[in-house]
Amino acid sequence: MAQPSNTYDSYDNANSIKEDIQDIIYNISPDEVPFMSKSQKTTAKSTLHEWSTDTLRSSAANAHIEGDDTTATAVTGVTRLNNRCQIFKDAIIVSDTDEGLSKIAKDKEMSYQILKAGKAMKLDIEKALFDNNAKVAGSSTAARELAGAPTWLTSNTVAGSGGSDATGDGTDARTDGTQAAFTQANFDTVMQGIWENGGTGIKSCYLSAFQMNKALAFTGNNNQRANVVGADERVINSVSIYLTPFGEVSFTPSRENRSRDVFIMQDDTWQVATLRPMKNVELSKTGDNSKRQLTTELTLVCKSEAANGMVADCTTS
Image (cartoon, rainbow, N blue to C red; front, top):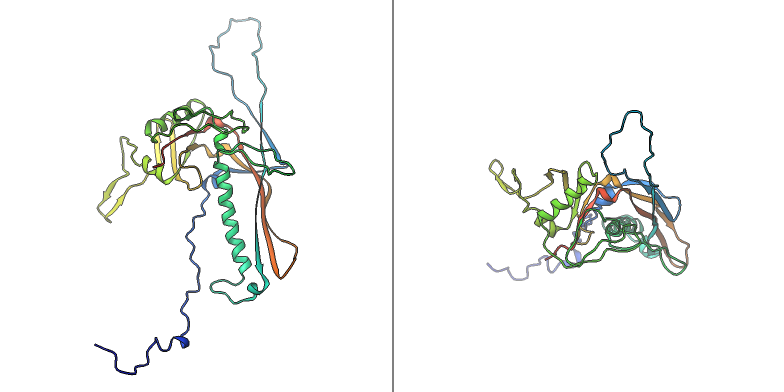
């Protein structure tokens, strides 16, 4: 069928039709920060945040003659560690004209942009906590940087050929090795090491989407990760809790750690020490615009590296 001649339709009336725009803004960018969220929180009082760790002596045969003289056991002092507080900052400038305009799905542009910046800064922090980055003392011309998780782990690690651990005090980064596929055998080796070194409780395994798919192939005597459920026709192909002889592990996909690194963490042995909580401040006005700044300053504390581990140098494709 054809349209009758001289029909006045919606195309002719385009200049009179109101816009049809939803009063909502969709943003699917991820903003999860599982490692930072699960780590304990504490307060830093200096840009150099310090803490102490200690260990028990090794077990030994302990039997003595009745009435004998007692010889004191040799004891060692605590180990003193530290990390640098890193400044995280973002700023937004919005013209005064734009701030006064009527907007779709938002009242004030500055408020909306500050909210976005805060979420993005949390991702920056999560990335820094996972980075294979040594601490930097900083100066008047260089920024302070915190040492990320890989620089502290030495007791329970599996690395590729040529890969090696850092010193373990945050002063240097670990050396990357030749990449090899992430395997259940390597995962179990790290779990065994953690248990032998005193790690207890449920662990969190932080890994990329690619490595998560490798973990889905882990086998066990009750592998229920890939079964069709007849009642609702769902196909289950996931793993949340992995039971091992050395404890439970909660698998948590992470977007901010390097895909080549798989971390097995006891979350209560990590702290985020905050010197300055995130603050939104107005900057001085220098023109026909408004400026606001988000700032926070914090560092990472590793209370007991031996309760944690990693499988490093995993292939990523």
